[in-house]
Image (cartoon, rainbow, N blue to C red):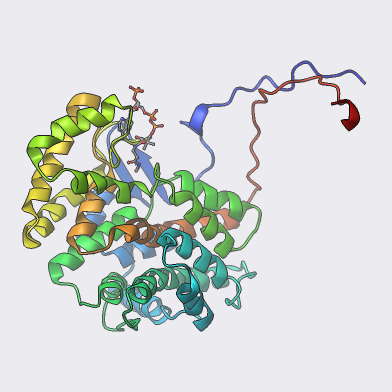
Length: 381
Ligand code: COA
């Protein structure tokens, strides 16, 4: 048999930039013009006229709900927020040093063992599991914080929305209308973003006909990294290290001279300002003023102008998400986990779309290793 000289003539595209890896009806991003569209609706429209739960309904059903549909959808979501007691025990047993994203990923994976419909991929079962998984994911994050800070876990209030319950169950206070408006928007903006790394990971897992729980676990592991969802926690670092807008220029120049990245800036797809950052900026301002953190806003504005001047790049959603979450009194180690709860709804939409018209996702690679080596017996190596 002849030995190969070359294996393939294919060339890999680094980071799969601009590679079309599938079709979707769920979302599209126009990075050159700065448009983000959920199921046909520009994100600006939804931010103005819809809540987080309405946007979730849209992604799962391809239509915005009527008032009656929304009422029963919200009631279903809030009534599914209870966790199996074994999962609560698992949260209690986790080392206090474990990152919330690691514990969230482990707990979501564990839910598969307690869900009677884990292996059922029928449309109805997937609908029921979507409601359950979104609601339970939020409770895991809220309960985790309460347990780790020695506070009692709180039950959902059936009179409040999913987003309001999330804030209430985590902080123990019913949010003000201003806080709730900012948090509803924050969750809506984190809900979905096309074929990003974590969504692609969930679709790859779903394409093997593995469970929704397994696919979400892949998404959570992928979102955790600091180049993806983990950026919002790191974005707050600057504010902790520099508390004076006059020192920002020197600080940013120092970071860039050392070849470091400014977290919360730049984007693979957006070449103009991230529309999500634009929508969150005003809420960040209002909340900072209300919380007596006006200096934070001045520093943020300064960071934006210096980074734009030096690198020509804009803040992404994580920059303002970090500021809004901080102003809401949410703890920094939970920023990515809170993002993950919202994105869970987007992942669930993609998992269902993948199941509905599935073909195993199995790409190929450009081989750049050696060829024609001869294997010697171990005694001669
Ligand atoms: N800080 C400083 N420089 C940055 C930067 C940042 N946050 N983001 C991109 N750049 C620079 C790169 O250094 C590079 O500059 P060069 O051409 O002079 O070498 C150029 O912009 C292109 O960067 P590249 O890494 O090719 O872009 P990418 O598309 O692979 O990366 C991100 C996209 C998101 C990974 C990148 O912008 C980043 O690391 N941002 C910080 C993390 C973050 O906020 N992630 C959340 C995204 S929503």
